[in-house]
Length: 347
Image 1 (cartoon, rainbow, N blue to C red):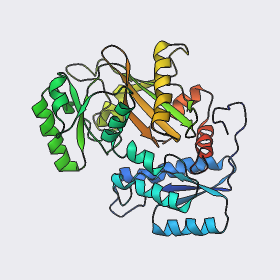
Image 2 (tube, one colour):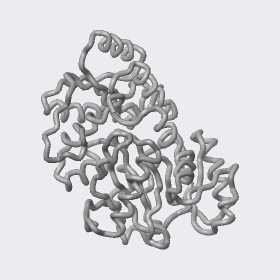
Image 3 (cartoon, rainbow, N blue to C red):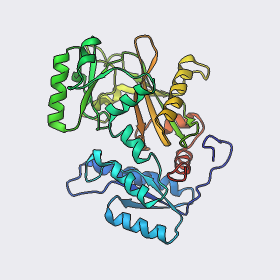
């Protein structure tokens, strides 16, 4: 199956798709429970293709049910949407490990790739550097030298949390002492490793990819973030903070927009980002679906901010997957079908 064969009708080769989501708890927050809403929404779309969809939380009972279904020879696949295990994002790989042990097909990345990329963004940057892929310099409390060798603005962020968690305007500074102090404070308050990325002043782009490991992926048209010039003045920097990404009382999220597929097909910038996206896909052993986040440096050259395996797939929010896909003539059902066709371990 070539995932970019757009002129060929795509058929899901399973009788049932199980929408695997986070286990809800009495103490689960509204944000955590939204994971279940996403699973329901995507399941509704998949069911329009004529395939049965079933909701299941990730827990020991579900794993037993899946094992019995496999032993019975049932033809099913897992649409893996698990983000937290026991409400801990750092335990997300346990879901993939359990599915791999069962030997059932599941969407998205495998355990090893998740651990190398999403589970630790700091280690992902090390991997990018080892493959000669451009990414901003970084520093930690135990690796401070870059802060002093590269004067200028730096941005503090988490290595394990996603969704621009606790990314604020105040996280940017040119003062190494302040940056190190902030990393320490956030590690004490939220846990996990926090690091500083060199802040890049240029435009910001995303490129989504779908495909099988070892094959060139299908590249979706680029997304470019736009920032309201009036709001991002008086010292505010145009980058995606937590408030700007999610709906907050101060309406900061309304100041960030997006445009899709507006770079010319032969644009030098578009071709560079597409080449880097494909190189990253192969260098990091990606498979399933992924999104590469780029930002331009002072010389207007694209640098890789992050590699997102299993990126956000909510329909009603701006996922930066469906909207650019629509510019390529793909519906939400088309995108989800392509993702299912690239499921582990079938690939």
